[in-house]
Length: 134
Image 1 (cartoon, one colour):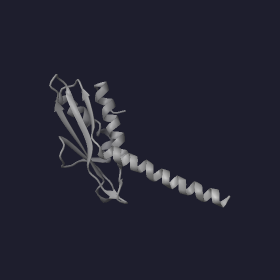
Image 2: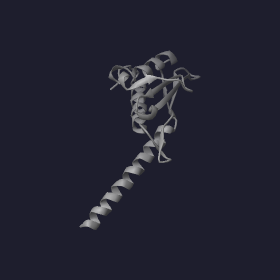
Image 3: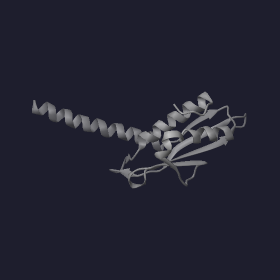
Image 4: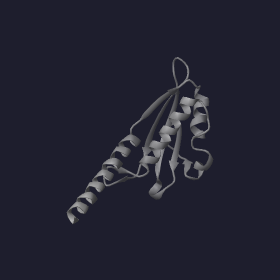
């Protein structure tokens, strides 16, 4: 029985590390989406995704994107950069990535899952063309 519990604990820890590694890779990779909204409306939708009760957790920051938001947290949190660019045929293209991170154990990023959830929320808002986060 002790052998099984030891195996289950080790397997659980390995699973947790693999999950965090995948979350980290998703957070630091660039996610691109397109919308029919003009760049000004798109930028407002993206800013609204960080509004409401999320304003306590996110703050404006400097960075390489058109919009840069830093998650408040231990050791500076994580900065999410978003670039909004007009498309040739009308509408906008949005690129989102984690531009500044705090790395632990050489490959794990603090708050990677938070960035991934914000990316998905922004994609949903842009697909719907509305400015109220869900």
